[in-house]
Amino acid sequence: MKIIAGNWKMNGTRADLDTMIGAISKVKTENRVILCVPFTLLRAGVENVAIGAQDISAHAKGAYTGEVSGAMLREAGAKYVIVGHSERRMYHDETNDIVRQKVQMALESGLTPIVCVGETMEEKRAGKTFDVIESMVRESLPTDVHDDIIIAYEPRWAIGAGITPTTQEIADAHKVIADTLSYMGLDGTPILYGASVNPLNVGDIVAIRNVGGVLVGGASLKPQEFVTIIESAK
Ligand code: PEP
Image (cartoon, rainbow, N blue to C red; front, side, top):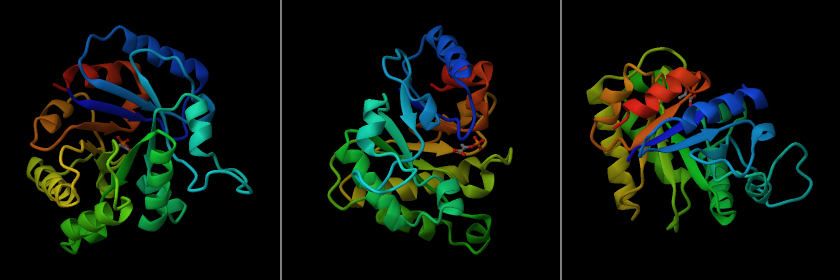
């Protein structure tokens, strides 16, 4: 069983979601399929696909204009939430500290957080990839987590770029993350690979050791491509 999660970012209409859910409902798969959609598309009662959000407030309620709490996400039908996506870290200055508070809030709200970590090209060139992802994992998770969480390794330089790291680079990064999680008492936590996954490369990627599935951006918006990814990930 692999986890296939889609990240729609700020894309999609209700009609698009209906079409995608219809396409996925025809697929026979043992994989767990998750679609993380904009807040306005959250819905309950969907079969075959778990619905997730793409962000959560670090606060439970109150004067935080524009934010959406964990309880609200749950009520709207979300079971998962992406936390600390590189676009949130980049455009909204989310630090590991903020990400950790959001992860805590997700867990307290009964949501499974999909926590994103990954190095920039600058950090990669400076040979800092392993240090960066190790500290991102350590600092982005509360110390006493025992609940379900999912980690997504998303090298920032490969997101939406149509390029992926080599098989060895993915294997090495996932090993660092798996070892860090093990040190934190979180053995068995699924680690997804994300960035430029497509129907042609997904089979090779999910065959890499310690890769528990994929987080898919652009290709998760195209029913035919996303369905092929779900079917090809074994
Ligand atoms: C993402 O941004 O989470 C992502 C995986 O994007 P893409 O697949 O488009 O690279």
